[in-house]
Length: 75
Image (cartoon, rainbow, N blue to C red; front, side, top):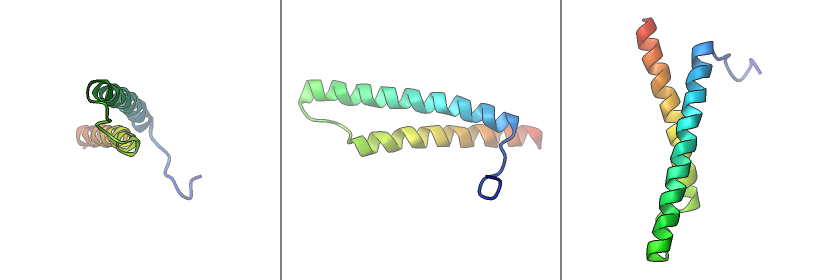
């Protein structure tokens, strides 16, 4: 695996775990919002594809932000 991916440090691993939780909650909130909108207006606000990407971008984005903040503290 070392050919394609670099080893994650302990701090990067902790940041990824935090980002996964943020991504999970963003998924839940977006699914809840979408379902509530459906009950009120009888059509969906977001597509499944949009919800998928919103959750992934939230997780990877938050991980990137946390890693950048940690790098600034170390430097």
